[in-house]
Image (cartoon, rainbow, N blue to C red; front, side, top):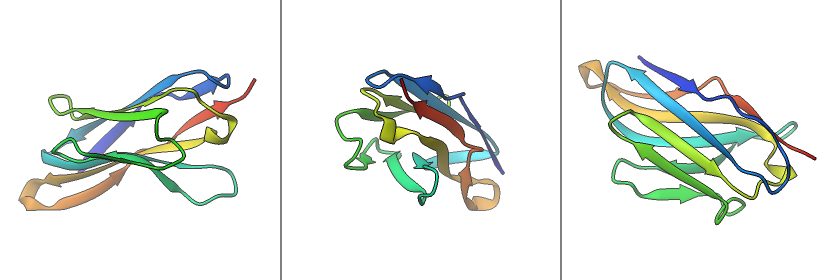
Length: 120
């Protein structure tokens, strides 16, 4: 299986920055896609950004130009750099990893979630 450990989010003022990280561990042969989703109160979970094994990225229109996703393959870690944060970015952020593990299985794993609150 795959274990994911997310960094702690926090309270940030509008216009501020925050970086989230998520480290994957376990019997991992390779990691395909890594990403971040978020869920605000009363709303459905939505994809924020993802990054493939070849480094190609995808992000929601609402965060383009403000959030940057990156990964460190040597550390099996994905990062989300969030700049110019807005109150509407307030949500629980979840890390997601699609990895190939023992017996050539592909598993889709989720982190426990970390709260990000943007408020003055």
